[in-house]
Length: 506
Ligand code: SF4
Image (cartoon, rainbow, N blue to C red; front, side, top):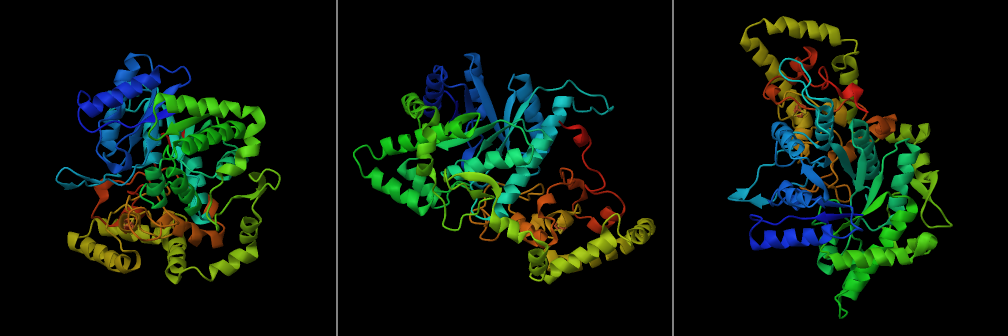
């Protein structure tokens, strides 16, 4: 059993810090709680660093998981943080992309998102093998036990399947345990385990059970916490029970106990309790979950299935249990036939089709014109600067209206179905979607998530399930403001230089 801890704002000796510490110490005394999991600036707010509370807990022998998000620091600061964590004996790291930052001291913080959760897993996996120093020698390896999150409670196919694909990428990049994002539909949780089994991915998964309150239910329902969904039906129940004398507390704890019992029955390795909980709440949830007995979860599985009317499921419903079967959904199978794909192709945007054509003719390393253009760019390298500037201008003038290009110089258009992550993804995600989308929309801006759009563009060509198969992308910031075309043809971009070491992960 894991319990999530949120640190306070201010120093640990302050009142709020002491309260958080005492709460954590209380939990640490329970033999039923194996690990305490400490968040990193949750919901984008600045909080006390997880390691400070973690150090206190480790000093009394408590196992902890440190959450590490990529929103507030670039790759160098995350590497440095890795050395610090490893030096202080923290091994369990939960790698996250992180929520978009909230306003901080003096105004809105500038988000980093220099790398993402996949990049962080890649870098820390490499640290586990021993990063190479300036002379190419391996440094002392770290011993991180890396974890990842999957947001599996997604409404639409174009959101859900990319989340699964990104999970596969995270596991292949070094995640050795998984915690799913909180949700209130156990059919989706059942489905997650079945999808992992179908994909041949063997990794322990811990079920996230966020214990609701009326305030939390309202916030999730309003979409104020990225990636967590509370449906109309569930928020209505929360409102009804919250009008009782205990403000719905017994209802919320009972719901959580059912989730824990069902998760155990489904085969999750453990449960992960979150929310405003004291030790007595945790013990009550665990005791009540026990009361359902080894098979009782089957009779209550229908009590935790809060889904939208048009919710997409990867697998067909099992009529006997109301949960997931292992049979891929008929709707999905029908949409993957050659005829369906051919029809869908006609609906793809014309600029997407022309971009594909241009890529396969000129820009892909195997394209028939690639070598000709490469030789041309090689020749231009030794031409006067003005010639290179003219070429760069031609590129810019054509890419701005087509893709809203921001001139990053290290282009990811071919990997995201010709959608620019710099201009159209608030977190500049290049290795798959973050978990924050809501009904297909970006958590930050009122527009469709580029990864959901990419999925829909690729599906008519039968390429949607391989959309995240390429090596992990680390974009090279040294190329900003330079010609991405020149960098492609002259082998300077991330496609020509996948990060070393990825090939021997796992
Ligand atoms: S070069 Fe960079 S900014 Fe321009 S379209 Fe490609 S990814 Fe976007």
